[in-house]
Image (cartoon, rainbow, N blue to C red; front, side, top):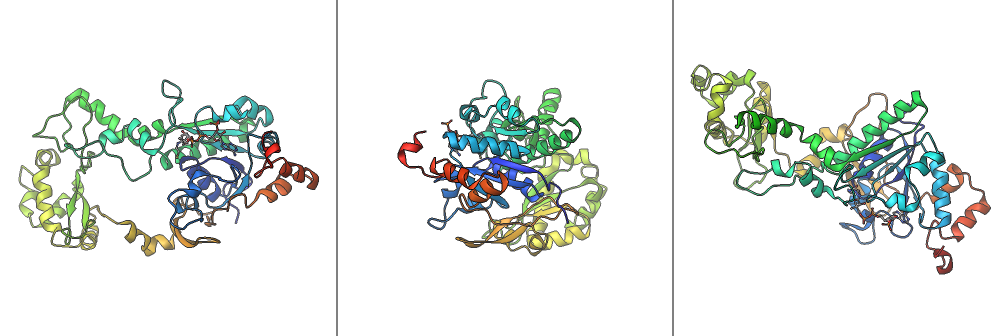
Length: 426
Ligand code: COA
């Protein structure tokens, strides 16, 4: 079976999380991803959050599956010559260096485009053009600057960042979509193009519903689905909504049996309007089906606190899985709060390849998240991440077709590894 992106070669000049998530997805879709790393140290994440001394961290291995690694010192003449040859042999260049770093290397868009007019050059940056365009950005900076933190958390608490890496992995996903769209356009135009995914913009895109609410607030000065309604006050910006869904179907996190000792004995319960009558029967409030205070959604909005307190009296008598089973049998949407431990052990996720066990030559077996996007005619197999520079020789000889003499000269110049001092100064 062929894979969706078979035949596409990617020069992966990414590091840390945002760029690597993008190129990992492309690799899972079948692209040949060649990760360029600095000799000696490689991607900084190889050594970050290590759980086994001297072994590539889980941070690195879980973000760099199915790639080949070549070490190139881009700050040497020989290294730049290899990089330029790679640019001529690849379809896509992906990078997420700090603003200006690629230009300083001599790889401006103009230069890349001149070397390979079909090249798609894709970048993650913290901010798009404007007053912050030169700033370095990490995950939580993007969560704050993209509107997520101001709208996450409880009304009386601090702005809060979320564990979902919407700034890094979320932007990587946006970039991957931009790349495949540009590849598709190239099939008609024959030309490459630049693709930019700023992290602030990606987070804002994921917070789209909050900009919706900002405008509703400005028009009506209230948001009836938010916990501040009806007793609290609204300011001029969308407030933090705690665990309220804030959307058309009110929801909340409720305690389940065992909550006193188990921090994850909770369930998200949605009072979806079409199943309201079933909810009333289930929790023992059949009178609410016809009572004017509860029968219709608008009447329920000022009483959500009371309603969820009553539903919680019922959920507290059951485990989260019992609530899940009973509610789903009635088409009532609920979500158990699953811990990472529970997810790691979840059989159905193992069966679909979303949780995979991977073998690594120095680490041994570890769990990873496989491709969450399933294509019926392009199967993803998760392969271990490469060791630093593991494929340097293979890339130089088989992909770039350097002769043995040229390879020897490249190596002697220090372009692919630690060079003798005199040559490293090149
Ligand atoms: N050989 C030689 N030098 C190399 C190299 C190689 N193979 N690969 C990278 N470098 C150099 C670059 O040329 C640059 O040097 P310069 O600053 O002297 O020009 C440097 O390494 C990389 O710089 P930078 O990107 O600034 O790394 P950093 O660790 O200081 O910053 C980030 C990290 C993530 C903050 C920054 O890269 C960034 O803001 N990226 C864009 C946003 C982003 O993706 N953030 C999320 C990360 S998960």
